[in-house]
Length: 339
Ligand code: AMP
Ligand code: MG
Image (tube, rainbow, N blue to C red; front, side, top):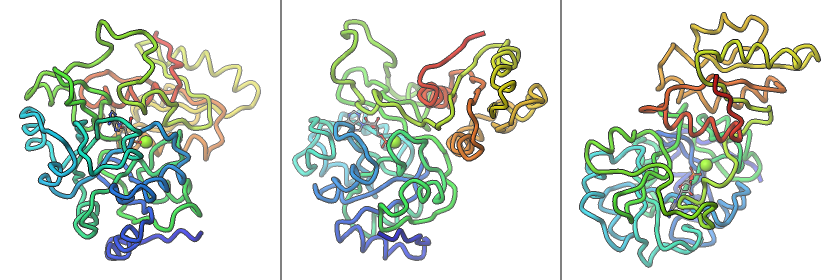
């Protein structure tokens, strides 16, 4: 199949494909999504097929107006309503009790559904134009870094989907925050653009393993969390703490002596610490927004550069740093060294 690249002025063509039950990649303010009519089982199955996504990993349903949520869920707790009013449109996904309209394939058979309203003019226009909600995971091959540019989508899904709607580089660069609103207090399942600190100014939120949960829980709360994610082909090693530079130098030696490519993701101001390594610049020191935006692009660059190993300097886990470290740990498959 030929994969067409559509411009925002061709939104109607993208909408027409979606109405025919096809999948289309489109920009959101977080990352590119691979969308299909959320109410059409066959269309949604095509998402799983194009991505190679495991069937038991449910999708987020995107809506174009806050009022649409009522048709998709059984109830909206008042505190969830408060969050919608404050953070929608925006990078916050709410897990609510599922209504009858949503087919089982979307939620991987769960009785809950994840819903959000994206804050991107192209996504909102597309949703308005189709009139139905779009189920959309990130538009990458399962396990690869999420796409933040149309070219990333093209690199992964060329020949597998009919079209990519090109809206330029995405704003946030990390996926939405996922919050389970079916438990009390609400539980953060995935940190993202809307921070834990921001959520807690409005409602109590639990995060991390809660007491009483069996070890090795069979059904993870956010099923996507059990899969390897965001991973380039290079070996990724996350290094935290004040001795990171010395540790990275030391661990690089054997690779360098074999003539293998060694990269390091570091803040611009710290690049001089690594004269022998390939620098993948994280942006100005401490600028978490800039880092989030370029994170997945840098992980993809590591592969284009043919690096054997990629060291990444960890960041502090507050505000957007919580989402960034969550993604980096997955990219590193939990290979983490504290110094
Ligand atoms: P993606 O769209 O690929 O960024 O992944 C969506 C994330 O939302 C995954 O981690 C899913 O497991 C999670 N998710 C989607 N639906 C639900 C749900 N009903 N309950 C819990 N987590 C969900
Ligand atoms: Mg994804």
